[in-house]
Length: 169
Image 1 (cartoon, one colour):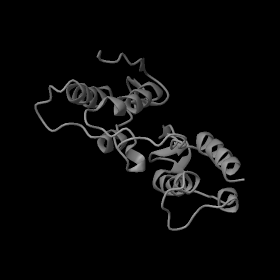
Image 2: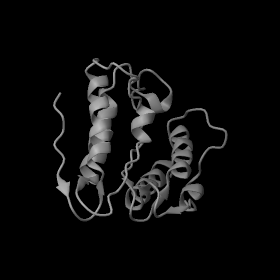
Image 3: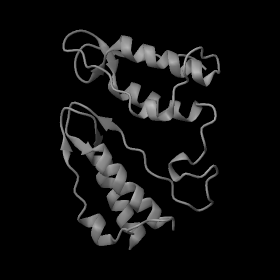
């Protein structure tokens, strides 16, 4: 496994290089089982937040975010269907979506989207859910906007809602 090469940008959306490098080094050490400190967890990767340099270089946000999404699969001992709480995926089950995160443009509140998507996936996959989701719930779904903190890409979430509406119809 090789260390990723991220493009360095001086303008636009970018992350502080030294913070990204530190997390990437820990991810690679964990994936290669040569870690001397605590292993990186999936939750830690998902919750990673990096400074955005006001001036100066930084790594491409898109490239770093794509690497982090891919890195989740490398971690040793990670269950195959972690989000569903099962060790093995069920044939024919629809997988939960993964959305890109945005930081400097408007997005949807991560916790609100995650809670709703969890209910949708439990409903369409026949899992246990306290309140099954209806087509009407999907059509009326609204999430709080985020602007300066991390949020999910609006276009991707809206596209998922369209798909979920089809599943439930």
